[in-house]
Each structure stands twice: as structure tokens, then as C-alpha cells.
Image (tube, rainbow, N blue to C red; front, top):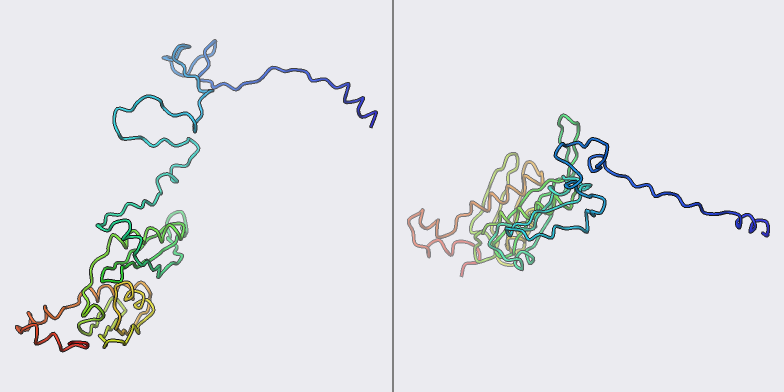
Length: 260
């Protein structure tokens, strides 16, 4: 240990000149500058600029603020954003109370000149349980962002569905969508929702309480969901039936289950 201490005592620190890196276009001297208009008076000093902490101090002439990002940030991260601004008459509190069901989340592959490009696909159904519902589709590289896109589109595509006595259908329906045939039947009070599990979630979001359904043919989730929304969009109310048949509303109002 004594020998080691003596060896350290003989060491001495020799000061060296600090080497600083300068940019070629910012040097003024014997070297030729890149632009003839540059001289030692107008060459900016970029050595003291910080990309994160330094901001322009001059007051802008307009209220529009330009978004400045650091040079090392990739542009696709900035542009590929999902906003929460939705063109809908619903307030933010009403949107938060909506029932949101992500019924389909799967991985899909798109084939192009670069090869197989994988991405995530999502189909979301939203509703308030009181006749207002809609569905939307979204696709993104991440599943969470795809669900978020689909939810925003579903809220934007919401519409009102008529219900008989606020609980069931006014009539039995049969609707065909591509290879899927969907049969919807009105049921008496207390029957419940006895349908395909995708149609069950749609009925809960809309607010149907007594209904049964049968899916024939293709049971692909996207086809079943779209067939259900198309079928429920073509519902005819007793007022429309009475007007078509030339009868009074009282003649057709109590024909269905649950009429008082």
C-alpha cells in the first residue's frame, strides 16, 4: 500500500486546451463560407442554442401558434396522432357515460410492394342504453390506437333507433347482409335478450330488453354486427304501418306483445 501511495503522489495533471467543435458554415476566417452573403456580422452563433429550453421571445402577430418540434423527432410520430375532438352534439360528460364495447379486435395483413404490412383492426359499438347507438371501425399499428379510432368514429356515427314500449321491436324482422341472414323477433315483457352474443351487446347498447334473434349463414362478426344495425335501421313503427294500411293507430297499436 505504501508503494502504491508513493506512485500516485508522483502523478501530476497536465492542463490541455479545450477542443470545441465548430460548424463549417458558421466559421469566419480564412475558410470560404458556404454562402457569399455570410460574413462575421450576420453569422448566427449556434453553439449556445438549446432545442428544448430556448423559445422565440418576440411577440407573434397572430394568435395561431406554430408547433415546433425537436429536429431528432421523427415526423410520423407528430403527424400520426389520434385526437379526442369528435364532431358530435353530445357533451364530454355524455360521451363519458356511453357504453363502449370493443366487439372485434384482430390482426390483419395488407400486401403491397413492400411486402406484408401487419396492422390491428377494431370494431367498436357505443350506445347510451336509451335508443342512441352506433358502430365504428378503426385500423392502426397498435391495438389501443385502433380501438380509440373506432370509438371516435362510432360516437360520430351514432343515430336513434325506435323501440316499441321502450323495450322491444314493433314487429319481427328478417334482414340479409351478404352471406348473413338475421332474424329478429319481438317478445313479451320479461323475456330478456336471447340472441347471438354480438347482437346481445348491440341490443344492450341500444336499450332493447325483450328480444330474440337467430343468425343463419355466415357468422362472421363484422357481417353480424352490420346486419343487425341495418335491420334495426329499417324498423317500421305502428304509426307508419297504420298510415300504409289506411287505418287508425288504435287498430294496429295493440296487436303486438305488451299492448295495454
